[in-house]
Image (tube, rainbow, N blue to C red; front, top):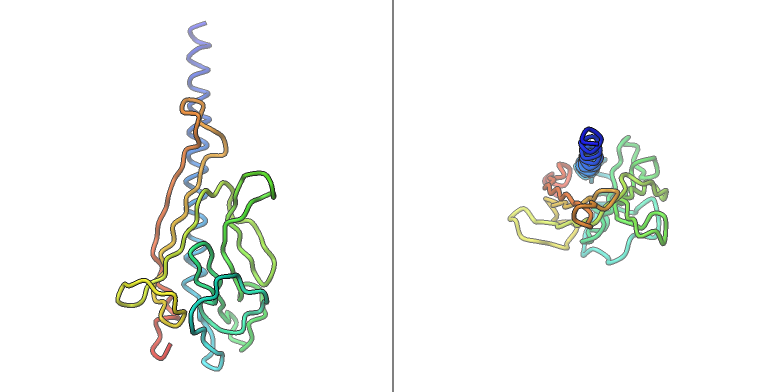
Amino acid sequence: AAVYSVFLVQNKELRNQEQITEMQQNARMAMEMMSRDLMMAGYGPSTLTRCTGTTPTTKPASSPYSCLGIVVANINFVSLSADLNGNGVLTDAGENLTYDRYESPTGSGNYALGRTSNGTKNPVVDNVSALTFTYYKADGTVTDDLSLIRNIKISITTRTANVDPSTGNYREFTLTSTVTPRNLMLSGF
């Protein structure tokens, strides 16, 4: 009975540790993907129009986007464009992206990080509790002017897939990073 009791305790702890590891890996993978894509925002030939003005409050209805750079800078999602192959048009795969948090599947209460590429949404990671973006000018002040964005702070919170039986709550992990899109730093942009 004592050996079996020890086995049950160790087995329970192993399951908890596996969930914690998965939660942390999900946050790291999502952060890496978003950071990589945001660093490329605005890449392309100077013949394309750069995004300017104050960000709209909704996601763009059309893809491809009509400007190059950060297209929408919302606290809950970001849309960006980059001419990755330099052909002067924003119609190829991966050139029009939106990152957001959405319920997956609808009505489940589980939220995922979505990556919409040229109108097709794909889940990146599951169990996302929160996702926020903050946009900064070169002097470090917050901005909503697309042409003045020089840094983007991303904060993502993931949770374990199951409730921790010892606390009755999900365990959560928050990861924050600031990205400097190198193509938005170019002079004249």
